[in-house]
Amino acid sequence: MAFDPCTPDLVAPQLVRLASDVISQAEVGNSGELTWEFESGVKLTVRPDEDYEAWGLVGPKRRRVICTPGGEVAVWSAE
Image 1: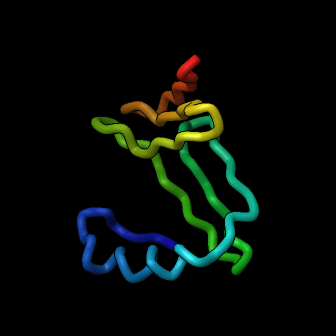
Image 2: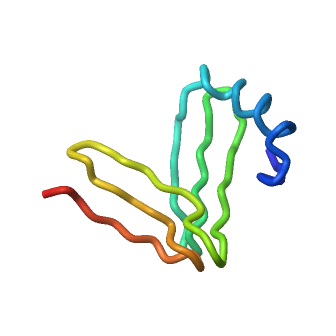
């Protein structure tokens, strides 16, 4: 699945379809890309951005993982 985030009217219907799908695998690559694979076989990859945080996740105990500008991945917890 590939799309330009600058065209939300085209992106939204694709993402809505994934809302009821189950993530079967998630991986953060060496250059900061986040890839989710869904049970339906769809793969969604979020690539890093040079100027903005491309993605962020919050997990158990409010542990956070963020892709900072340029692709560096930062991990921290609330504890």
